[in-house]
Each structure stands twice: as C-alpha cells, then as structure tokens.
Length: 160
Image 1 (cartoon, rainbow, N blue to C red):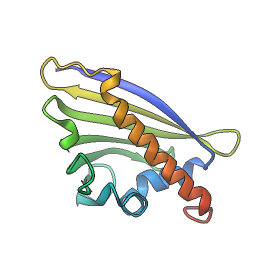
Image 2 (cartoon, rainbow, N blue to C red):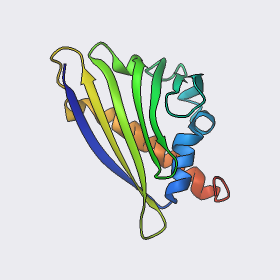
Image 3 (cartoon, rainbow, N blue to C red):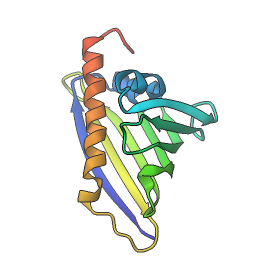
Image 4 (cartoon, rainbow, N blue to C red):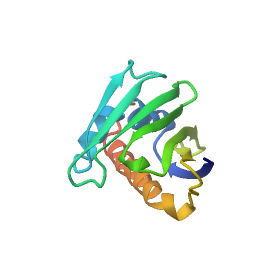
C-alpha cells in the first residue's frame, strides 16, 4: 500500500468566499441543479454537514459511476479550506483504498481567487497511481468548477 499525491490549481474571477460556499458548503443543492445530467443528488447520511459528516453523491445513469461516499475531515469556513476523503464508491475501483482531498480558496489581487487542490491516492497492494490515471478526474473537477464559476458570474447576488 502506498500514497501518491497530485496537486493542481484553478484561477477564477469569482471571490473566494463565493466559490467556497458554492463548491463546498452548498454543493449538495447546487451541483444537482447545475449538473443534472451527472449528479442525481447529494445526501448527508451521517452528521450535520460539518467535520465528521459523511455525504453520499449519487450519479445519474449517464455517468460511468453509480455513487461515492466521502467523509468531511476538516471544514474551515474562516480560512476557506476543506479536507475530505472518498471512502467508498465506484471511482475507487479495486486498486484504491481511499482518496484524500484538500481544497483551499485564496484571494487574488484582482478580486478573484486561486483554488489550490491536492489529491492523495491510498492504493491497495503495490498498485502505483500515475499522472495519466488521474487526468480524467482532474479534468472533470475543473469542468465542474467552470460551470459553477459561470453560474456565479451570471448570478452575482448568489452567495454575495
């Protein structure tokens, strides 16, 4: 068993607090609304949505995955940081035990933000995660961020 970590960044012209609220705090409501072709629903199955809670994301039939469960490890609303771990679901397959994520939203001088993301893949056995193995997941995450960013730009009163 090993752990491999990848990082990437996404720049947005939307303020960090609005991106954090949309993508982290209110994602259970916003993602099914903005991406109904992929996300069926997001349910808190344990806890109150704060650290220690477990969420289940259910995907629609068009998605390659049926569901995933993730545990919220840290939810720092003041510093706009969220750490969570995918603990169950189709994306893990038979080679991954879990994937730990850290997402941080930092203000930029132009009023927007820089989203810094890291993903740590905990493997089963001696499987080695390579950059190309995570490319599709990273691209879909960035795609979600772009959809949310567009929605927030078109609706400046939301999460203001």
